[in-house]
Image 1 (cartoon, helix red, strand yellow):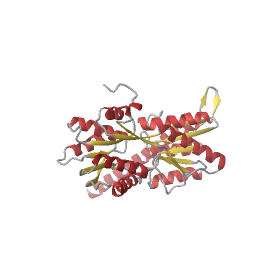
Image 2 (image 1 turned 90 degrees about the horizontal axis):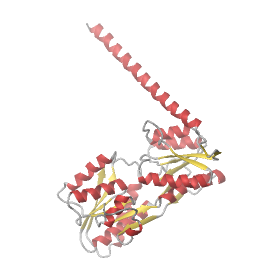
Image 3 (image 1 turned 135 degrees about the vertical axis):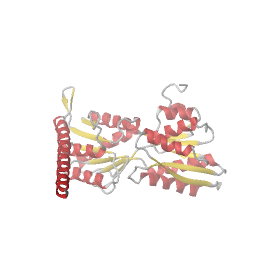
Image 4 (image 1 turned 180 degrees about the horizontal axis):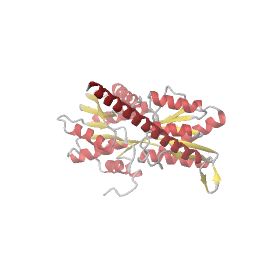
Length: 343
Protein backbone atom coordinates (compact mmCIF):
# COMPACT_ATOMS: atom_id res chain seq x y z
CA UNK A 1 0.00 0.00 0.00
CA UNK A 2 2.81 2.39 0.93
CA UNK A 3 4.61 1.77 -2.38
CA UNK A 4 1.40 2.34 -4.33
CA UNK A 5 0.81 5.60 -2.47
CA UNK A 6 4.36 6.75 -3.26
CA UNK A 7 3.82 5.92 -6.96
CA UNK A 8 0.57 7.92 -7.00
CA UNK A 9 2.33 10.86 -5.33
CA UNK A 10 5.09 10.72 -7.94
CA UNK A 11 2.50 10.69 -10.73
CA UNK A 12 0.77 13.74 -9.21
CA UNK A 13 4.07 15.61 -8.94
CA UNK A 14 4.93 14.70 -12.54
CA UNK A 15 1.56 15.93 -13.77
CA UNK A 16 1.93 19.17 -11.79
CA UNK A 17 5.36 19.74 -13.30
CA UNK A 18 4.03 19.15 -16.81
CA UNK A 19 1.12 21.56 -16.22
CA UNK A 20 3.56 24.19 -14.94
CA UNK A 21 5.82 23.76 -17.98
CA UNK A 22 2.88 24.00 -20.40
CA UNK A 23 1.57 27.13 -18.61
CA UNK A 24 4.98 28.81 -18.83
CA UNK A 25 5.32 27.90 -22.51
CA UNK A 26 1.87 29.26 -23.35
CA UNK A 27 2.67 32.51 -21.53
CA UNK A 28 5.97 32.84 -23.41
CA UNK A 29 4.25 32.17 -26.74
CA UNK A 30 1.62 34.81 -25.93
CA UNK A 31 4.26 37.40 -25.13
CA UNK A 32 6.25 36.50 -28.26
CA UNK A 33 3.07 36.88 -30.33
CA UNK A 34 2.51 40.35 -28.91
CA UNK A 35 6.17 41.21 -29.60
CA UNK A 36 5.77 40.14 -33.24
CA UNK A 37 2.66 42.28 -33.68
CA UNK A 38 4.45 45.35 -32.38
CA UNK A 39 7.60 44.64 -34.36
CA UNK A 40 5.56 44.56 -37.57
CA UNK A 41 3.92 47.89 -36.69
CA UNK A 42 7.02 49.59 -35.32
CA UNK A 43 6.82 52.32 -37.97
CA UNK A 44 3.12 53.24 -38.06
CA UNK A 45 2.00 54.96 -41.22
CA UNK A 46 -0.48 57.78 -41.48
CA UNK A 47 -1.47 59.49 -44.69
CA UNK A 48 1.21 57.43 -46.48
CA UNK A 49 4.00 59.14 -44.50
CA UNK A 50 6.51 57.19 -42.40
CA UNK A 51 7.50 58.67 -39.05
CA UNK A 52 11.12 59.31 -38.18
CA UNK A 53 10.85 57.80 -34.71
CA UNK A 54 8.47 55.62 -32.71
CA UNK A 55 7.99 56.12 -28.97
CA UNK A 56 5.93 54.03 -26.58
CA UNK A 57 4.19 55.51 -23.53
CA UNK A 58 3.45 53.09 -20.70
CA UNK A 59 1.15 53.95 -17.78
CA UNK A 60 -0.91 51.86 -15.38
CA UNK A 61 -4.36 53.48 -15.67
CA UNK A 62 -4.26 54.53 -19.33
CA UNK A 63 -8.06 55.03 -19.55
CA UNK A 64 -8.19 57.78 -16.92
CA UNK A 65 -8.78 61.40 -17.97
CA UNK A 66 -5.46 62.40 -16.42
CA UNK A 67 -3.32 59.98 -18.42
CA UNK A 68 -5.31 60.45 -21.60
CA UNK A 69 -4.65 64.21 -21.36
CA UNK A 70 -0.91 63.64 -20.89
CA UNK A 71 -0.84 61.20 -23.80
CA UNK A 72 -2.67 63.66 -26.06
CA UNK A 73 -0.06 66.28 -25.22
CA UNK A 74 2.74 63.85 -26.11
CA UNK A 75 0.96 62.66 -29.25
CA UNK A 76 0.44 66.19 -30.60
CA UNK A 77 4.01 67.18 -29.78
CA UNK A 78 5.20 64.07 -31.58
CA UNK A 79 3.26 64.86 -34.74
CA UNK A 80 4.99 68.26 -34.90
CA UNK A 81 8.37 66.48 -34.88
CA UNK A 82 7.36 63.62 -37.20
CA UNK A 83 7.35 61.23 -34.24
CA UNK A 84 4.63 58.68 -33.51
CA UNK A 85 3.78 58.24 -29.82
CA UNK A 86 1.86 55.07 -29.00
CA UNK A 87 -0.02 54.60 -25.71
CA UNK A 88 0.96 50.98 -25.36
CA UNK A 89 -1.80 48.56 -24.35
CA UNK A 90 -4.76 50.43 -25.85
CA UNK A 91 -5.33 47.85 -28.60
CA UNK A 92 -4.38 44.67 -26.78
CA UNK A 93 -6.99 42.05 -25.90
CA UNK A 94 -5.34 41.26 -22.56
CA UNK A 95 -4.75 43.85 -19.85
CA UNK A 96 -0.95 43.70 -19.42
CA UNK A 97 0.59 45.45 -16.42
CA UNK A 98 3.25 48.12 -16.91
CA UNK A 99 6.13 45.68 -16.32
CA UNK A 100 4.89 43.37 -19.08
CA UNK A 101 4.37 46.38 -21.33
CA UNK A 102 7.97 47.41 -20.66
CA UNK A 103 9.06 43.95 -21.85
CA UNK A 104 7.04 44.44 -25.03
CA UNK A 105 8.57 47.86 -25.66
CA UNK A 106 12.12 46.56 -25.10
CA UNK A 107 11.71 43.59 -27.44
CA UNK A 108 10.03 45.80 -30.04
CA UNK A 109 13.21 47.90 -30.36
CA UNK A 110 11.34 51.20 -30.16
CA UNK A 111 13.19 54.51 -30.39
CA UNK A 112 12.18 55.68 -26.93
CA UNK A 113 10.11 54.71 -23.91
CA UNK A 114 8.04 56.99 -21.67
CA UNK A 115 7.00 55.12 -18.52
CA UNK A 116 5.08 55.81 -15.33
CA UNK A 117 7.81 54.31 -13.19
CA UNK A 118 8.20 53.33 -9.55
CA UNK A 119 11.15 52.57 -7.29
CA UNK A 120 10.83 48.76 -7.47
CA UNK A 121 13.85 46.60 -8.34
CA UNK A 122 11.88 45.12 -11.24
CA UNK A 123 11.29 48.56 -12.79
CA UNK A 124 14.95 49.49 -12.27
CA UNK A 125 16.04 46.33 -14.09
CA UNK A 126 13.64 46.91 -16.99
CA UNK A 127 14.71 50.53 -17.47
CA UNK A 128 18.39 49.58 -17.34
CA UNK A 129 17.84 46.77 -19.85
CA UNK A 130 16.17 49.21 -22.24
CA UNK A 131 18.97 51.78 -21.91
CA UNK A 132 21.67 49.14 -22.34
CA UNK A 133 19.90 48.11 -25.54
CA UNK A 134 20.12 51.69 -26.81
CA UNK A 135 16.54 52.74 -25.98
CA UNK A 136 16.39 56.00 -23.99
CA UNK A 137 13.82 56.00 -21.18
CA UNK A 138 11.89 58.93 -19.71
CA UNK A 139 10.23 58.34 -16.35
CA UNK A 140 6.89 60.11 -16.12
CA UNK A 141 5.11 61.41 -13.01
CA UNK A 142 6.71 58.70 -10.81
CA UNK A 143 10.49 58.37 -10.92
CA UNK A 144 13.01 55.56 -10.55
CA UNK A 145 16.09 57.26 -9.16
CA UNK A 146 18.30 54.16 -9.13
CA UNK A 147 17.91 53.47 -12.84
CA UNK A 148 19.75 54.72 -15.93
CA UNK A 149 16.74 56.71 -17.17
CA UNK A 150 17.83 59.80 -19.08
CA UNK A 151 15.23 62.20 -17.64
CA UNK A 152 12.25 62.55 -15.31
CA UNK A 153 9.12 64.50 -16.25
CA UNK A 154 6.75 65.31 -13.41
CA UNK A 155 5.71 67.91 -10.90
CA UNK A 156 7.51 69.42 -7.93
CA UNK A 157 6.06 67.21 -5.19
CA UNK A 158 7.54 69.34 -2.41
CA UNK A 159 6.01 72.49 -3.95
CA UNK A 160 2.72 70.61 -4.24
CA UNK A 161 2.88 69.81 -0.53
CA UNK A 162 3.68 73.43 0.29
CA UNK A 163 0.60 74.58 -1.63
CA UNK A 164 -1.59 72.12 0.27
CA UNK A 165 -0.04 73.34 3.52
CA UNK A 166 -0.88 76.95 2.70
CA UNK A 167 -4.44 75.93 1.86
CA UNK A 168 -4.75 74.23 5.25
CA UNK A 169 -3.50 77.35 7.05
CA UNK A 170 -5.93 79.54 5.09
CA UNK A 171 -8.85 77.33 6.14
CA UNK A 172 -7.73 76.96 9.77
CA UNK A 173 -7.14 80.58 10.72
CA UNK A 174 -6.80 80.29 14.50
CA UNK A 175 -9.09 77.27 14.87
CA UNK A 176 -7.88 73.75 15.72
CA UNK A 177 -8.12 71.43 12.72
CA UNK A 178 -7.68 67.73 12.10
CA UNK A 179 -6.08 67.21 8.69
CA UNK A 180 -5.87 63.84 6.92
CA UNK A 181 -3.75 63.15 3.83
CA UNK A 182 -4.92 60.19 1.76
CA UNK A 183 -1.99 58.09 0.58
CA UNK A 184 -1.85 55.04 -1.67
CA UNK A 185 -1.27 51.71 0.06
CA UNK A 186 0.15 50.38 -3.23
CA UNK A 187 2.61 53.15 -4.09
CA UNK A 188 6.26 52.13 -4.36
CA UNK A 189 7.86 55.52 -4.90
CA UNK A 190 8.79 58.42 -2.62
CA UNK A 191 6.53 61.10 -4.13
CA UNK A 192 3.90 60.83 -1.39
CA UNK A 193 6.56 61.22 1.28
CA UNK A 194 7.86 64.36 -0.43
CA UNK A 195 4.36 65.87 -0.58
CA UNK A 196 3.88 65.01 3.10
CA UNK A 197 7.16 66.73 3.97
CA UNK A 198 6.08 69.85 2.08
CA UNK A 199 2.80 69.97 4.01
CA UNK A 200 4.52 69.49 7.37
CA UNK A 201 7.25 72.05 6.74
CA UNK A 202 4.85 74.71 5.46
CA UNK A 203 2.51 74.36 8.43
CA UNK A 204 5.45 74.42 10.81
CA UNK A 205 7.08 77.49 9.27
CA UNK A 206 4.07 79.57 8.16
CA UNK A 207 1.58 78.95 10.97
CA UNK A 208 1.86 82.52 12.26
CA UNK A 209 -1.50 82.34 14.04
CA UNK A 210 -0.39 79.20 15.91
CA UNK A 211 -3.51 77.26 14.98
CA UNK A 212 -3.51 73.79 16.60
CA UNK A 213 -3.28 71.54 13.53
CA UNK A 214 -3.23 67.77 13.86
CA UNK A 215 -1.83 66.00 10.80
CA UNK A 216 -2.40 62.34 9.98
CA UNK A 217 -2.10 59.88 7.09
CA UNK A 218 -4.82 57.51 5.94
CA UNK A 219 -3.91 54.60 3.67
CA UNK A 220 -6.17 53.98 0.65
CA UNK A 221 -6.34 50.69 -1.23
CA UNK A 222 -6.43 52.08 -4.77
CA UNK A 223 -6.35 48.74 -6.60
CA UNK A 224 -9.59 49.84 -8.31
CA UNK A 225 -12.40 52.36 -7.87
CA UNK A 226 -14.42 49.98 -5.66
CA UNK A 227 -11.56 49.51 -3.15
CA UNK A 228 -11.02 53.28 -3.07
CA UNK A 229 -14.70 53.81 -2.24
CA UNK A 230 -14.52 51.15 0.49
CA UNK A 231 -11.40 52.71 2.03
CA UNK A 232 -12.92 56.20 2.04
CA UNK A 233 -16.14 54.86 3.54
CA UNK A 234 -14.03 53.65 6.48
CA UNK A 235 -13.10 57.28 7.16
CA UNK A 236 -16.71 58.42 7.29
CA UNK A 237 -17.91 55.71 9.66
CA UNK A 238 -15.38 56.82 12.28
CA UNK A 239 -16.56 58.82 15.27
CA UNK A 240 -14.01 61.62 14.94
CA UNK A 241 -13.93 62.81 11.34
CA UNK A 242 -11.15 64.99 9.95
CA UNK A 243 -11.92 68.66 9.30
CA UNK A 244 -9.80 68.70 6.14
CA UNK A 245 -9.09 65.82 3.72
CA UNK A 246 -6.26 66.16 1.20
CA UNK A 247 -6.38 63.98 -1.93
CA UNK A 248 -3.44 63.27 -4.22
CA UNK A 249 -5.31 62.00 -7.28
CA UNK A 250 -8.56 62.56 -9.18
CA UNK A 251 -10.19 59.26 -8.17
CA UNK A 252 -9.74 59.88 -4.44
CA UNK A 253 -11.00 63.45 -4.86
CA UNK A 254 -14.17 62.33 -6.65
CA UNK A 255 -14.83 59.56 -4.11
CA UNK A 256 -14.41 61.88 -1.10
CA UNK A 257 -16.65 64.44 -2.83
CA UNK A 258 -19.39 61.80 -3.20
CA UNK A 259 -18.91 60.53 0.36
CA UNK A 260 -19.27 64.03 1.83
CA UNK A 261 -22.61 64.30 0.03
CA UNK A 262 -23.76 60.78 0.93
CA UNK A 263 -22.95 61.20 4.63
CA UNK A 264 -24.43 64.73 4.84
CA UNK A 265 -21.11 66.35 5.72
CA UNK A 266 -21.24 69.22 3.21
CA UNK A 267 -19.90 72.32 4.95
CA UNK A 268 -18.30 70.25 7.72
CA UNK A 269 -15.33 68.81 5.82
CA UNK A 270 -13.04 70.77 3.52
CA UNK A 271 -11.77 68.78 0.52
CA UNK A 272 -8.43 69.75 -1.01
CA UNK A 273 -8.38 67.84 -4.29
CA UNK A 274 -6.19 67.03 -7.23
CA UNK A 275 -6.72 67.55 -10.96
CA UNK A 276 -9.61 69.22 -12.80
CA UNK A 277 -12.08 66.62 -14.07
CA UNK A 278 -15.64 67.80 -14.74
CA UNK A 279 -16.74 66.17 -11.47
CA UNK A 280 -14.10 67.99 -9.43
CA UNK A 281 -14.80 71.34 -11.07
CA UNK A 282 -18.51 70.82 -10.43
CA UNK A 283 -17.70 70.08 -6.78
CA UNK A 284 -15.86 73.39 -6.40
CA UNK A 285 -18.59 75.27 -8.23
CA UNK A 286 -21.14 73.82 -5.79
CA UNK A 287 -18.97 74.70 -2.74
CA UNK A 288 -18.52 71.04 -1.77
CA UNK A 289 -14.83 70.83 -2.76
CA UNK A 290 -12.80 73.72 -1.34
CA UNK A 291 -10.03 73.70 -3.93
CA UNK A 292 -8.00 71.49 -6.23
CA UNK A 293 -4.52 71.60 -7.71
CA UNK A 294 -4.26 70.77 -11.38
CA UNK A 295 -1.22 70.07 -13.51
CA UNK A 296 -0.56 71.21 -17.07
CA UNK A 297 -0.97 67.78 -18.66
CA UNK A 298 -0.39 69.03 -22.20
CA UNK A 299 2.93 70.51 -21.08
CA UNK A 300 3.89 67.30 -19.31
CA UNK A 301 3.26 65.20 -22.41
CA UNK A 302 5.18 67.67 -24.58
CA UNK A 303 8.14 67.62 -22.19
CA UNK A 304 8.41 63.83 -22.61
CA UNK A 305 8.75 64.08 -26.39
CA UNK A 306 11.10 67.08 -26.14
CA UNK A 307 13.35 65.20 -23.72
CA UNK A 308 13.61 62.17 -26.01
CA UNK A 309 14.21 64.34 -29.08
CA UNK A 310 16.89 66.32 -27.27
CA UNK A 311 18.57 63.11 -26.15
CA UNK A 312 18.44 61.75 -29.71
CA UNK A 313 20.04 64.89 -31.15
CA UNK A 314 22.49 65.86 -28.39
CA UNK A 315 23.25 62.61 -26.58
CA UNK A 316 22.01 64.09 -23.30
CA UNK A 317 19.08 66.07 -21.91
CA UNK A 318 17.92 67.85 -18.77
CA UNK A 319 17.59 65.47 -15.85
CA UNK A 320 14.33 67.01 -14.66
CA UNK A 321 11.37 68.61 -16.43
CA UNK A 322 8.74 70.05 -14.07
CA UNK A 323 5.23 70.84 -15.33
CA UNK A 324 3.29 73.84 -14.05
CA UNK A 325 0.60 73.44 -11.39
CA UNK A 326 -2.43 75.70 -10.85
CA UNK A 327 -4.68 76.17 -7.82
CA UNK A 328 -8.40 76.17 -8.62
CA UNK A 329 -10.87 77.45 -6.02
CA UNK A 330 -14.11 79.43 -5.94
CA UNK A 331 -12.30 82.61 -7.08
CA UNK A 332 -11.34 81.18 -10.49
CA UNK A 333 -13.41 78.02 -10.96
CA UNK A 334 -15.60 79.69 -13.60
CA UNK A 335 -12.52 79.79 -15.88
CA UNK A 336 -12.39 75.99 -15.81
CA UNK A 337 -16.08 75.10 -16.17
CA UNK A 338 -16.49 73.00 -19.32
CA UNK A 339 -20.12 71.90 -19.16
CA UNK A 340 -23.40 72.25 -17.34
CA UNK A 341 -22.85 72.47 -13.56
CA UNK A 342 -26.54 72.06 -12.77
CA UNK A 343 -26.67 68.32 -13.58
